[in-house]
Image (cartoon, rainbow, N blue to C red; front, side, top):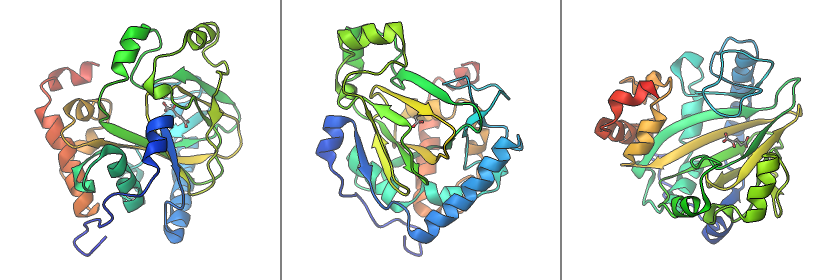
Length: 294
Ligand SMILES: O=C(O)CCC(=O)C(=O)O
């Protein structure tokens, strides 16, 4: 970043062919060492607040998808890291880390981070006492979708990307490589109909070392298993500017803080532009009136 706050690294060298083929790619040494240590400290604070119920936005054990109830037996995530009330502005710096943004630009074929749309930044953690797991799913295609419709939906152009950045060893995410490009096989569909957490042929665990990130297609067939071993993994999503529907989805549930005029203060010029891209997309959404009824 220069003094104007513009991020200079434009696109990152990643194995794009592997990403296209497998639906995920792992990148190394994401954060500079001092920032990596500061990230761990900030996450400790956020996790502490979440476990003590001093922070209300949490993923509650027993429920895989939002909205989460206010409380439950344990938690498996902390939501809305960039919320000003969490009082940890370092998360805005982490979200706009040049290597993360430039990797997203490469995946999304964008010339620079100024063409990205700011989206969500959360933390995935281990439950303290209560192991939990997610069923196999694609993020935007419901499980019962018929195969022809599933195949069609999987050919939609890519509008965004997401990543897990591990601060400690993390092997919770399980994916079926290549399944982002094809509907479920008959065997997969039959297996998951019996048990939506069953092992599938060719599935692999994505093992991350500290400071490695996996970028993955959100419609790859994936599930996750959480035991009580320490997990502290940043989970972010980034869109392409002009993605009105994504802007609408990002801003639909309890994220009024993102719409505040001063939200992007302290994020540098690139972060500000990414935030403006989100707000511009939201402004163009004709469906805004219905958003809070969803
Ligand atoms: O915990 C993970 O790595 C995966 C989380 C996930 O699949 C989701 O939030 O949809």
